[in-house]
Image (cartoon, rainbow, N blue to C red):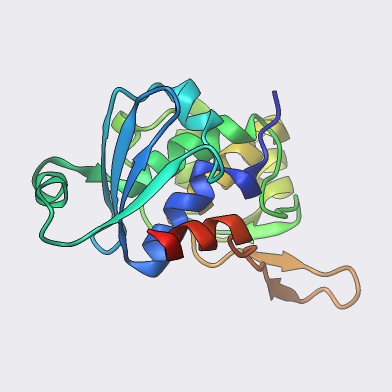
Length: 198
């Protein structure tokens, strides 16, 4: 199954971080999640991976929470880093595909070593991290240098970028060979309307 990244929970929680808002998300299977945009934390209850991957702004009930809400306080005390959730969702959604307009010519570098004890990964993720901590490299070149299937490199790149582990990705243009920033698409209109109503 291919997921539509532009209409996903991943986009929703990323937007919460950009807007620095607290959100209560209720999913159609009965699970719920608190997302603290400013603190970059989350806490979930009765959420399966399948339900999170199936969640969209349209089928998720969204409510803004004030800083004083008990659920917000509890998430501050016992929440996990939002980057863990972003990595997990992006990693599973990619399945070897590029997301959000990424290309195999994109150059990327890791700013820090991911905590793989909490993240889905393969042994090749460790090899890619060791290389990309030192220098920016294109997706294609990582595959060639480490002799790793390019689908695995794409999956790693997508997860690392969405979780905030990478420097600003760049794309080499065919016309002049220069790198230009990759633009992240904006949130869909339905999400904005939901946030305004909450």
